[in-house]
Image (cartoon, rainbow, N blue to C red; front, side):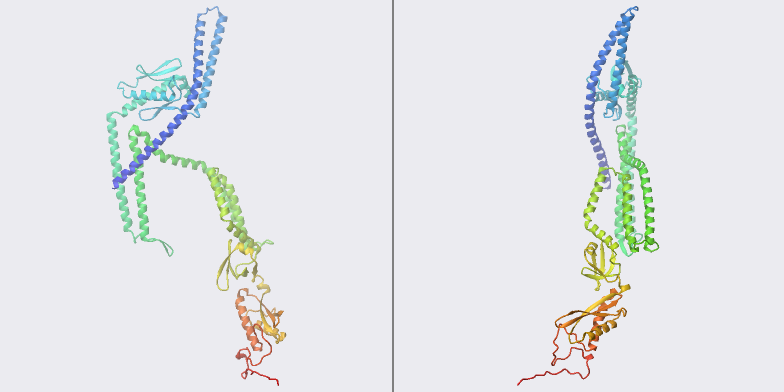
Length: 621
């Protein structure tokens, strides 16, 4: 099973390589079509130039014949004919220069058709047509001619010759012309006809000699043996790789609850021993297949490199790894100046922020005082400045980021900004409200406040919410935007210096003199713990109702956070003092006429001989 899997993996790699070459062939065929169109247009122009060249050549031959027939005394006629020859020579020079200029412009966009050797290697490239043969047909024809040379047992290093004629050089083998080199071919290669023909002769000769050497029986036998040796080595290597990873898996299993005891973060078990073993086994399996595939990937180019027909496959396979690595290294090297610029900018802004942070600490500690700027403004102001500085730094860095000029990068940046803006609209309003509340200084941590209908102590003030603990130990989170839109009462802001006035109302009937009631309520307030003696409590009559008078006792306290306890003690003391002084607190009202009803005052406050009066009934005669 293991060996079959390995073979399947090898076949998959080979299939992917062959598929890739098939795709490359498809792309190449499309490019060939474009090249044919470009070269065809050029060759139409070249045909007109060639017709003119032939006409000029015939004319030149006629003029040279006429000059040779003239007598030596006919100088005027000879000069006239010589001038015509010079004009034709100049015209020929201009023709060649024009032709060269057209070829140079065509080189930028046009690719020629390769002449293929025995091992699918490109010997040279054909750009121009010859007679009725297009460049593609010429390249194919020359490739077949060269292929036939490989089967000729009489071929040797001196078999190929170059035969020169007017504006053309032929490379011949015996009486067979292998190819012809024209003036246009020479212009495409920026050389002369003779030099180009000799160059092509040497390349054809060398490739035929190499083919004969590589395809000899002795050479093939050696290479087949070497290929079998490589296959044998890789098979043994894969077997031992599999054994090694099986051994490592067993070692991992044996270390459970020994060296492998799990991963803990303080008291939390992130991975127990069993889970950690399973994770290590998965990692072991991944490494195993990575090593197997890597070994197979390295072996294939070695096998391909043994035989000349597949030698170029090795370069392609290694190129799949080496080309990306080379591209990354070159890209990193080219990006290095921008990277250094980014590092310098970040360091400069880092020290700027450190300086601003130092000023923030000095203001917060009140070592540095600025008129109209409170110490508790230091932290939020620093955060605002910090955001602005970081944003400004990003604006400066943006052009130096890799891909910043890419439309995709810019589109993603705009899209993320759009999502952030619309997705955090509510949060931004709370953040802005939190900043406004900071600078309004409505309250601080620990203040007793009333926000809307919520009363309690402020325990946290963040950029988004304000948290309040009520008297019942309930923690209520209020969004800062709600705080801004509600009225806020701060009980603690002036309490330490000026005192907070607590107040409660008692309704007493008109039968009790108001002076007695004033004294009673003030005495009850003074008995209450945490109520200040100075300033002295005072009483206000808030209303005169049909059946009673509303008396409001006001007293000064400093502990605003203990209002509930103070109010409870004050109400107890009001009841006690009223009972001591014989003042009944009736609700909602009563009539002054009393006949046979016991008093509402508790018995503890009544005389020991107290008896409820009896009912008196009077009759009228």
